[in-house]
Length: 480
Image (cartoon, rainbow, N blue to C red; front, side, top):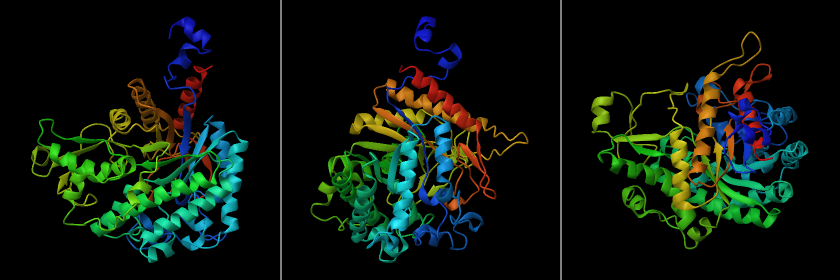
């Protein structure tokens, strides 16, 4: 922008360095999930979910950590909404605990549980923050798992009933609805790899779970549209930016296989009402997909209003016998959680990595958003993006998390780059609002833009949050 343009936009030269070329009305928010922050695991009529059970199995979660208390958001939600507001964020993505609303996953509603989310939504609306509600973020009621979980077709039907309950209560104030968060993790990490709840290691179960999760999504989409007022309904996928390690074609076949079992197993049924033919061939020795019934794919392909995209790093793959195996000297050979893909090497690439060893590469986000826009044409939102770094509170009371700050800057710029290439991206949600329970990692990894002292529950706004707030303000100033 020229000096004249800066003045007319109300921006100083310093502020303009923070501004991004994003469309008017672009959502800026932060995200959380119920089991990771709420605590109050046995309060207000809530009953156990699969994560309450899994966390208590010795060796499954680091340090034996549970979400029993977590960030105590159940009692401190008003404080957390005030923090959101102080940062100038306009949307908050949160999930509802099925076990809190409908103990056991079926039958009568728990008024105390539903009232908690009613109060939360009122608090958000009163603060001028848009609620972005996710119906399922991995915490399946334990009773439903006891009956087969997502391998059982009935779970999809129960999910639709639960979704209708939530939509009827909150649908007059909540417009933005996500049915499922990262069903790939629910299916493949939960039923094939065994590293997430319920901890099974049966690849055939994983594909049955994929289908019933998708069926539940389709049924829930229809239920929300019937019960809520003018909702926008979508699904959130951890779509993979799959890249072959070698560019000479050697690794193209393994990249195709991973793309099929990581991405297209969800995207094709959602958009085109069919499972990819190459995937069916790849996994024919594991399953015959006999769990697919007449009419299922029509329900699954019920049109959605947006696709949520969760991105952290690109997925670079190589044949286990290729150059990556002999020359890179890093990585691991995995048969799961990608059943049917064959042995795959995931090389550890040079460059910056987070405390979890994840590669920092914002170009993957740009390329992924452009690719999804070109291939599927849905409006997109980045519903999770962030990085784990262990920076704590300094003696001066400040959290100087320079690495996370740079990560957010780079990835917001990557979103703007995707928009400049024509991708229809309508929002960005930082993961996460708060340091929280990071699933099998327990409390050892911190993704929050707000630090949480788990002993005292004191919240401290990190430098990354302040920088995010500056970018949001500068970008909005351009719209005036």
